[in-house]
Length: 131
Image 1 (cartoon, helix red, strand yellow):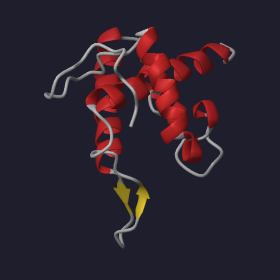
Image 2 (cartoon, helix red, strand yellow):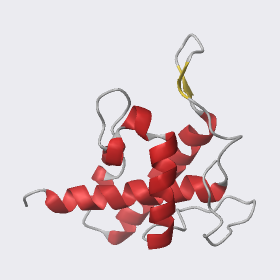
Image 3 (cartoon, one colour):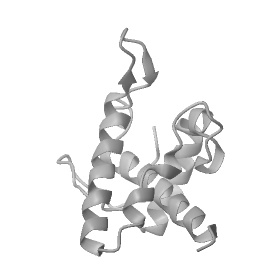
């Protein structure tokens, strides 16, 4: 489990888009949660080593959109996708999990804190790219 006791509680109803996006405290909590639960497959600092999908590509298309309204809608969609995959996992056609389901482990706060961390890493990496 991810220790989210320092974050504002979100309740039992899922909130979308990610209410912790840009929240530095949530990013720090999410970084720890990511390291303990996600880095083994998705790579340290969310830099994929090729074992699992590159999470730094989740919002790439969204950030390239000129319209802030389109960006917000796109990021809400990627939040929903991230939430569903994280909670339910992903299986192959023969029923083997390629991504474990964390629905019985992670709270809403944990899911959104980890996504806030990934979002912060996407922004960091995007800023490094030449324009």
